[in-house]
Length: 344
Image 1: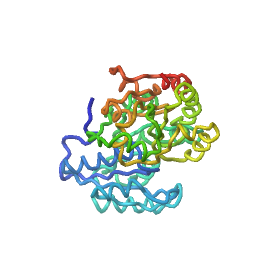
Image 2: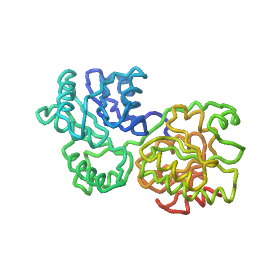
Image 3: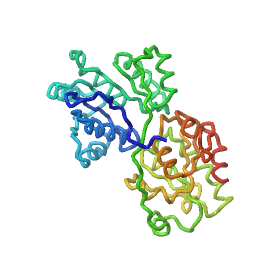
Image 4: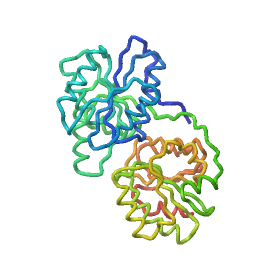
């Protein structure tokens, strides 16, 4: 398995190439980590790369921008005070002109929209988009995805991380020559072998029973509500079993309420967003990914690199990742049988 950072950078990239990465981020999740690694990889190749984050007015902090600054990367936060802000367009145009940009690389539908607006009179700028995965948990998101695909027909190159994405773009009329499938990758994990008992105490996990973990953004497409509901059967079969949920997101309050309603407070722990997963992975006995949609999730790559068994929905390119392992189990998305498997 490839465990090196994602190599979206063409080998012909030189110091004369000026590239802007543009991302509208809701936190520091898989796609955001890919963007950080890509920007760093381009700089290592000698390209002039700058990471632009569109200010998320719904958040108190801007995790992607802050992570880029902490890593010493060239990062700029673009102003934005609503869904559409002319100041964002103006700021992006300023960046394009100041750096004499050759390539503008976007990583979500909002960034694609702003990039298209900012370059309509700048045909010399090549537009590239990486599709990290479509979320279709609501009618509004499904509409955004359709609009994004229509817009992406105007782009010079599209990078996908799953074969199903290529198929969808082809059906939408995107020429095959513009579509490039590039697998995600991860940096080598230097596991921190913190004594298990100490880490269990820190995370509030009592006893020495098996630890199952879901590592994800707490949002509807991750389907964690179903996992929590069905975990009651696991606890009934093995009272020492524990479920660790790592991540944060809009559903956290509702999921915590569900845990309380089901009386699972002693069995389910919410760890929040963690930046020390190298410490957490050695504690996990099995990773559970009940998602309804995915691209190529980094968490599955990381679990496999740490030799952790994986139970996951057969979505995105997860089936390809688990095809050649004896420690992976695939089930249809939304299948209650997933948690029966967890209890095995």
